[in-house]
Image 1 (cartoon, helix red, strand yellow):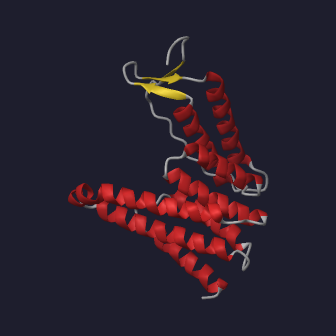
Image 2 (tube, one colour):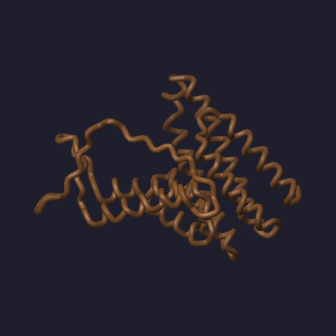
Image 3 (cartoon, helix red, strand yellow):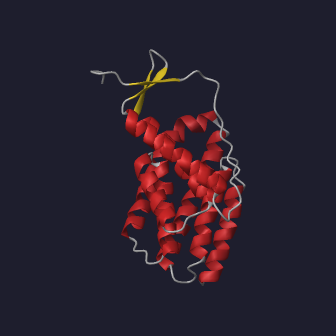
Length: 224
């Protein structure tokens, strides 16, 4: 297939992905942003197109499997762990391909970094996810959704790197107050940019706070 036919196939794959009940709207919109930047490079980004096709194939396989598992407790018990292992291996293979790719234009860098961020996120590598999203934004990924995703991941970073959950007291203990507050301020700025970025429609970000009384305390001297 030529470039135009392959882009058409990608659009069809995105439509197929949308039909799975396990697919979140944010994932679909995120992949659409990647597609739009890739489309800007037609037909000069063959290597990036190949990896994006592989990423979509992975997502179709992943959500087809998850949809089947969701309908059967027996299948979950037998296949959930092996499926998780296969998912991790597939994401690591995609990352290795992306890390070898050279990108020469802003759109190419955006496509590469957004795909890397997607893989890092699913692998639970929060700091790497943030760095990749920051690089994408520096090169022109100004869609409000990308700012929202960055803010969400900065929030995760603050909770996982600069705080710990204390089960006994049912509270979040901040272990690095300065870094924790700085990262949360950056996350709020990202959310603000996502809602008000010039020239873009506001992102319909549905932020839900639960009703739990979660207390946050700073680490005391001598605590670990």
